[in-house]
Every structure is written in structure tokens, then in C-alpha cells.
Length: 332
Image (cartoon, rainbow, N blue to C red; front, side):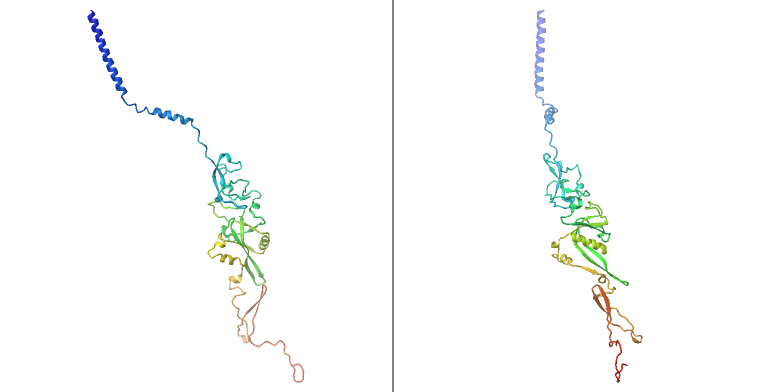
């Protein structure tokens, strides 16, 4: 009986020993296996958490409207004269023009009240906007006057004259008139005059087709304003567009510009040789004695603006009155 119990106990110990051996062997094998592939995801998640607590990125700097180049007093501002520039947020004045809050086109055609240096902010207080009160007075240079003249598609160069261009003013008028003829002439009455507006516009939008204006506003001196007022009553006024190239920069050294500044006028007889007057073909004709035709030289005599013609005779001078005495001393 005791032998049976001892045998059972021995077998139990043997089984327990075998299980302990295999258990330790399995645990050692599992410890030698590599870590699972998904295991690195845990550290990456732990590293991603601090990004939620990082400081927010600073907001981009605001864009302020500034002058691209120096703008002088009275200058008409064009799109190329302005640009947007990043500006520190803490130094932005309430008067500055911020991109996105107001378009740049609102300031195209404005006139500078005072000089604006390149890079300096443009504000409403520094310029006079187009169409506002006092705008035309701001355009004028000190001591100058604004005078408007009527123009047509032909006298206004088909709409290709814009504010800021410089023109010559040509007057076409009748300088002699009688019952049989009417003489006309054209003359340049003013030169190198600045155009400050065409109709009520002082600028041209990019990509916009030229429009034919009905009036041109010119910047002139007080004396030139009087000349224009008289010229407008005398005849028709035309505008001649001048080149933007300065005379000193011309290819001919300014010779053409100097010649064009001399007094200039053109009579109708200078245009058409068929008109009577200086330079016209000599007239011929006349009836002689016996029905024959005689030809004489026509001489034109100018007295001021009046012209008269005379034809000298080739024969003996005519006797105005026959006077003589006979042998008795009596008049025959």
C-alpha cells in the first residue's frame, strides 16, 4: 500500500519536473523573439502630442500701400507709382491703406498734396482723390490757371491725348474778307501746354480703349488764359500733340525743337497755289486795240493785309488832256 503511494508521488514529481523544464524553455524562446512591427507607433504618438501645445505661428504682416517712387506735389498718381509693402503690425497707423480693405484703383488718378518719398505710406490726407472737392485746384501748379477748350475727333488727335500730355494750340481763322474772297490762315498761338484733363477724366484705366473727349482742360499762365479766350472767338482751335522726349534728348540734339519754337503761321495761299496772292501764278489777259489780245506783267502790291494789282503798259504813256497853242497864241 505504501509502495503504491510512493509510486504515484514519484510520477507526480516527474510530471511536474517535465512541465517546469518545458515552461522555462518556452519562456526563454519567447524572450528571444523580435518586437512587433506595430510597436514603434506608440513612440510616434507620444511625440505627436506635444505639437498640440506648441505656440501658434505669428500672423502674416499686413500689406500697406506705399509709394514706389518719389511723388512730387501736384503730380497725378499712376498705378506704377504705388505698390503694396509688408508692414509691422505694431506700427500701423489707422490712416494707412491696408490691402484687402481698400483697392489700389481708388488712388489711381489722385493728386499729391505734398511730396511723398519712395517707400512712404500713402494716405487720404496726403492726396486729393479724383472727383472730390478741390481736386482741380490741387492739380494746378502755383500761379497757373485752368482753361477748357472745345475739341473734336480731328482737333483732339482722335482721342489719343490724355492728362499729362503736352500740346501746342493752333488757331485757324479768317484774316481777310471782302465781297469776292475770304482769306484764311493758321498760326500756333501757344506751345508746350500741359493737359490736365480730358472732359472730366484725369487718367486712363489699363486696357481701356481711348475715348474721344469734347473738352480739354489746359494748364496755362494768366496771360495765356487771355490769349485762349480771344482765340476761341476768332476761329477754330486744334491741339497738336508733342513728343514725350525732351528736346535735349532728341536724336538731332534739339535742333527740331528749337526750330519749332519760332513763330509760325501758314496762309491759305501757302497751301493752294490756285489762290491769288503772293506766290500765285501771274494773271494774263486784256483787250487791245483792233480786237487783238495783249499780255502784261501783273504786279502785286501789299499794303498791310490789303493787296492790289497793277498792269504796266508797254506803249507810250497816255495823254491825260490835249493842250497846245497855235501860231496866234490861241488854245486849239
